[in-house]
Image 1 (spheres, helix red, strand yellow):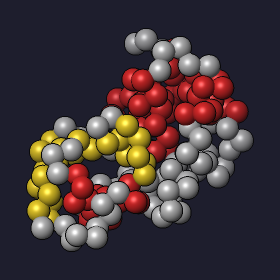
Image 2 (cartoon, helix red, strand yellow; image 1 turned 90 degrees about the vertical axis):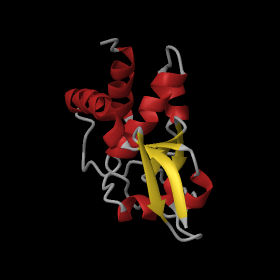
Image 3 (cartoon, helix red, strand yellow; image 1 turned 30 degrees about the vertical axis):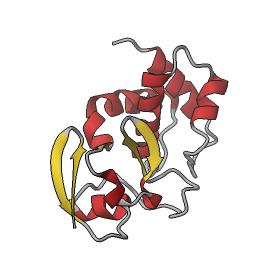
Image 4 (cartoon, helix red, strand yellow; image 1 turned 90 degrees about the horizontal axis):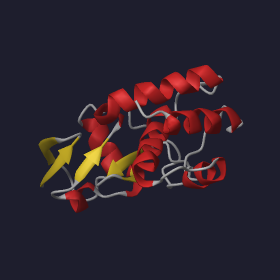
Length: 150
């Protein structure tokens, strides 16, 4: 079946099977930033933005996305680079496996929340696991990114 959606602002028509999850559909269509983690919505590594909100793509059926807007890190490249800069300054970047999903979630947070605190950031990111860090440096880097008005 065909599904029409917007991927990073571009209209796409994708051939999918009824049981295809968005994670698999994106990977079949050469979107390499969306990673496979737990496949049970527990780790957040497969996060994409659906209509601007972070969702795990490993449990989202592609056929339910007719006419919807999906954003991956390729669609927010400038903001992802800015966040990566702050991660580097704080020594918060380790293996990088979770970075695309983390960048998308932080981008959504920036759009949604005004003046978040470290505690608010922690709460918003609860679904994004990083296996390499202790989160402290990430939270500080994210706070600096959110404060950056440029």
